[in-house]
Image (cartoon, rainbow, N blue to C red; front, side, top):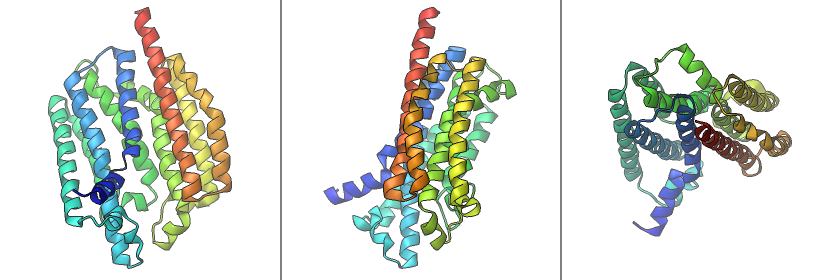
Length: 308
């Protein structure tokens, strides 16, 4: 494989986005240890592989379908896509997409056979979202439900599944099990929501021109900005509630040190909504929150282990 092709595939894979999958996985593992002191190594490894490979699948699949749409539109934009820019063979990219999906789905099926119907249902929903997110002409990402889908699958779904595969069969899957996880996964949930929302805010004009009617096209840029702020407030509220009820350690309150950075970046986004300048600010918010929560959770976990 030539150096040009390697660079093309590297840009299609988008390794920097794997961060958004890995952190919810780690938080799910720490949540399980903190609240249940349970750990199953093989389902955990399978879940890590399934999640990371599925994220890579989504990135490559998104790039592939963007290329097809851009080429069909005859605007020349397909030449900026990694497939066109680095002269990759679309058929080879499609083969890679199928290989990635099969690897991820195989791990998911294995987890399903090791647990029960609840994991099958959650898995089917998450994979349906992954497939329909960018595949075809009518995609979730081009509609008003992209943010909700990202919030559910990447924020809540990964966290919930990781916890349940480790506590099964010792803990029943019921509302008493699920609602604390909704609180504890507050930061992953809102970060995935705001990543998608921030992307759509920055792409608003281009999306309208290309017939993509995202949530922002319905509520407007101003409404999207207010929703952006509300989601961060909601994330901090859910996390505080989780600490108060005892399902997260007090050290997770370390995320409060992120407020100045988030406020600064939100003010920037409020003034300017352009992809090159503004979207990196949204990504920075996510990275800062994810890393700080993970560090805070790890500190609390270590202190809890010492007490025990």
